[in-house]
Length: 272
Image (tube, rainbow, N blue to C red):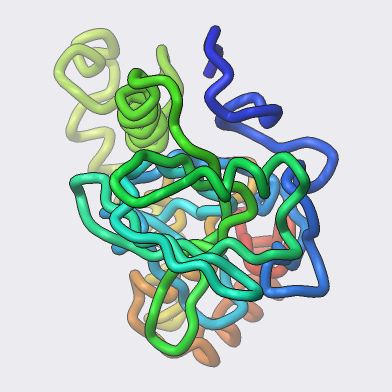
């Protein structure tokens, strides 16, 4: 998303971060970002409500929100309280959609970010960038960068960007085909009968599969096309099966050549 005001420091806004983490240490401490992947390089603007509803299939899985994976996140919120400790500072943040806790570790502070962090006080606004973590049952943002808000327009910019990104995930990029009356009128050759026939054909094609495998295939066929495919966490939540059963079913589907793994062992696409 292009912008004339640099609200992200040197990160260039949403999209992908280059050159590893631009905010300091990424390993060897609670401030580390762990596994490097295309997902962990992405930066998504979110609200506290989205943070609250983010889920994780298991301890090593990526965080998900509405079947979309979440890497690094950025948030603009009102600072309710600040608690400074020896190794980290704890911020309670509220953006009007909910309240969360962000932790900024001492070894993740560069000289510039430490100065910005020290200037943040209660009853001010701040931008936080980091990753979602969980300790026990408590979720928090592991902040790699935090700074005070100077521009009064930035909170509004952030909310608009959150909505823009959410619409992108819901409907695809601008100009893409979206189910609706206008698109149906533009494509009269596609009728309810042909769609029903196609669904029946797909159903017959995979009718020989065990129930769980068939459920996985049907779910994957309904997902919008993405280069990385479908994350296993979304499959687990949709089918409701346990992780071992899902792993075995995915293995059988790969052996049969129906699906294949993409960017890692947790993402899958249909072969056809």
